[in-house]
Length: 58
Figure (cartoon, rainbow, N blue to C red):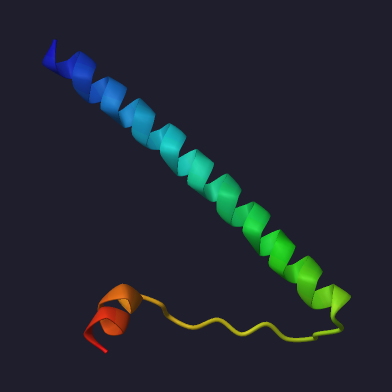
């Protein structure tokens, strides 16, 4: 029974990963389209790790 639950959890994890990857793909395409419409030739990204902590702590 334990193996069944582990298997089900792994399946849910793979589905969630797939959904996240689809969402990220969609969003990245939208960003590129928006930049293209506005005539931008470059898109800059920054590391937003722990951004919530930085904002909350001022």
